[in-house]
Image (cartoon, rainbow, N blue to C red; front, side, top):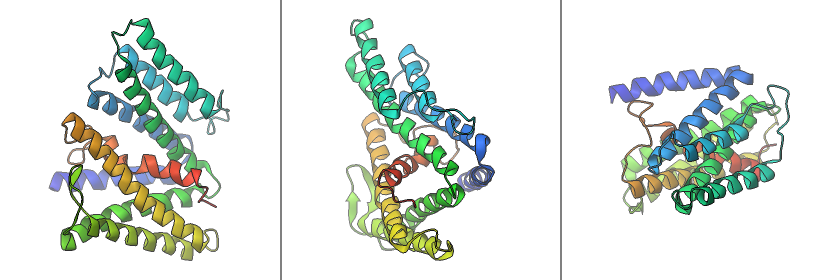
Amino acid sequence: MRQRLITGILAGVFFLAMVLWGGLAYHLLILVMALIGFYEFARMTQVSPFGGTAMLGYVSILAFVFPYQPLGLHSPLPFASMLWLIMIAFMVITVGTKNKIPIQTVAMLFLGTVYIGFGFSYIAESRHMEHGLLWTFLLLACIWASDAGAYFVGKMAGKTKLWPAISPNKTVEGSIGGIILALVIALLFAGLSGGLLPWSKAFGIGLACAVVGQLGDLVQSAYKRVYGIKDSGNLLPGHGGILDRCDSWIVVFPFVHMLMLLP
């Protein structure tokens, strides 16, 4: 418990300092986190993380999360075109190896590329928006509030299992507590934003962060249960790996952007 607490404090302070710094340094940190996340995903799905097929995944992650904006560059292709080319490249591997690398393997790696690449690219790009520091802190605060609310309410009043086949410790009461606390934090941001964040947008963001964030957590739990592992990695002692810590982030940030909830 002590190790978990120390690791959490140090990692949290470092990450928040990088969010405040912003710019190229922050974007490069997100890129490194994304590459480590894909390494964890490849290992989790029992694929050699340094094999040729996985290397295509790393290149794809780099293409998605590359710091184009901080360097004053433009992405060479729209995301949709990039996605299609990456899909074809993965499928060609199966053909080129005469099915020695089966379609199931490349399909999982392609899934991981989209899941991690899109998620971390939106995390990085949120900081580059106008008032990006506010929006980044808002989304992170709502996600963390949902986690904290779900944990503490679940501990104190949790009785009804939410989804025991996937995550036996989560409860319906905890989930509701997480949603309520995330909404409170989002509305607090709206009240302190000086009119930048409308109340209706704040409500939608708080709800999305809690509901979609908890869904992202369940998705990661489901994958780990399939492969019989407790944590995606051991980078953060007591906390697991990058995917364990960011499973909510990489679904919440794209979702909020796609619904155009940020002003």
